[in-house]
Image (cartoon, rainbow, N blue to C red; front, side, top):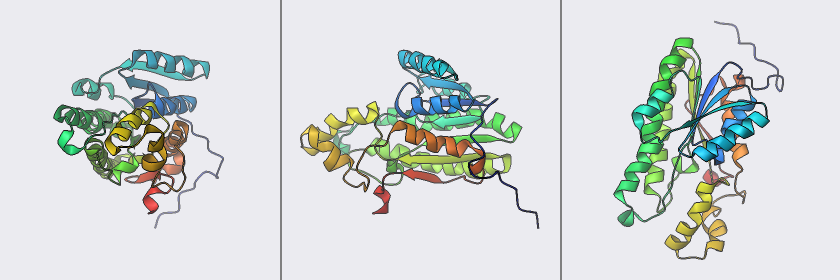
Length: 266
């Protein structure tokens, strides 16, 4: 029987990603921006991927001001070959990019459904595929997939988003099983509604679909099932991502870290 592994004392091991390269998708704003800044603050060289060149430039400037390193990569994740290539050589991969449309299934545009699944499920697969050879070669890697409470629960009128997030959960677990012998962990973080432009843009859609005024959407739709009745801040999600990249989480893999204010406790 092997001796127990000695772990650092609690609170004695700050996250140190010096010498590591991290790739964050959807990095120009919201959760992705917060994750990029958090990982850069931990010493990682961050490849920030997004379609929004201006947002990436602002992110890189903010990182420089804080003493971190962020390299902007303007990339549309529907270019799957380019996505896979961009992930080569990364030590930490954060699959965060997403989009949303709220419509009943019979009114949901098939082309939008296809795009959502491409960006939020197929692109993460290709990014993971591109990242794993380097991670396996060095015997260490961290993959964090920004899922959602909608990866665990369904909501009406979000067929594409819910399908993509449920698929991402399965992809993450499969990656965890394959990656474990190579020192690679794969996990999801599952926030409820986060204070991001993606959520703010949903309010009009939700109001129209549910037939209520916009000022009632937050309390009657978005936060209806949450015990903690507020939006999550992007920085809170970034801290969960950072935890999964740290030494204290080396035994955490194939799971979902739920940040939902008690939504799934019902």
